[in-house]
Image (cartoon, rainbow, N blue to C red; front, side, top):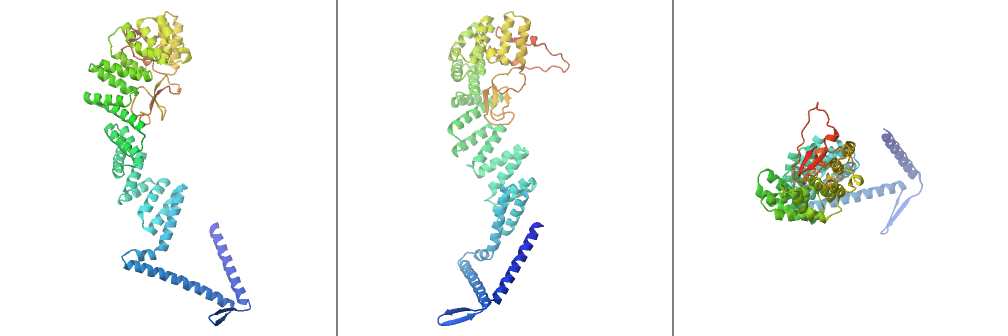
Length: 489
């Protein structure tokens, strides 16, 4: 309303100014003389202005006629759209102005305005390849996803815009959580643009999310060909995919494929602990303990890990505690000051019943870095040493609320996992699990998993308790290590 009032006022002002100017010119005495080629013409001031206006009008008409002549000549020479372009220039200019306004509105987050301007631009320009994408994005911004989907489907009809249409629908399906349809669309987008970086990333993510490891490896190879991934990262991801494929093959009973994939994963990434553990397990099952030992020692040299120790112990499950300590000696010498080495020594001493040695091996870990595992070890040491029951209970009470220590933690979302996975079970991110201590969350660790089972015992299965069961006394659930078996004393 205010803007309309302003326009009316401006119009009235201009009309008054024009009337005043004309009256002033008409009342002005004198004349304008034009001398040219021996001729002289005298005009009143108002007459001179009229002549100038007419001259400008004639010049503009001649300019247009010359443009029409040029367009006609082009049409006659074979340019079939020359005349239509000539007559539609004003319409085209308005169309491009509307297109520019829609893009500005889209960038400003004004979805409704952008959609209206894009519709106007499409009506004037009749260039859907330019306007429908903006219309679709504007509809999305305005919250009308159904209309946006319709626009994206219209883009599929034109070869020039088919990829954009597929990509737009793919984005919609991802937002809806329709992974199956999204995967098919990502494959279609890849077929249209095999070197498009974002499409490759989306396809790889969906394939890893659905455990399509063979497809993910092909996509990874395409990413390498497109040079969108550094070689070291590509090598690491190839190893992770091979490891995942090996685990799947092992579950399916295809031991030959599992062996080949596990060894290839270990070769590509010798520091990938799960790959080394699986390769050693498969080799040991075939009688290749020597090669398995070599693999485990190599990865332990990089960084000690309880899974490596457990796999190393599993190579000789029937050996005595004394023989085990002797066989582990080369590993223990590699990183003598590492916490994992100290806890490993303490656990082996507990298996032998040498409680003073277990205390010396553990050192001050229970005080300097109290975790569920170190505190449970101290509880087992105190119990074996004949300490008062209150001392044992104190260590177990601390263990219940202590940090669980290092775990497989997703670097993307921070979710902790009980075992390694190729993708995070919380956010589905690929190859983001790192062995580190997660930030404190107040979540207690289960007490029957506090000691790494490096002395040959299998993990204790977690049994659900009846809802009306009485809670156990903390003193009764402390783990101990006796003759190579984990028991609850």
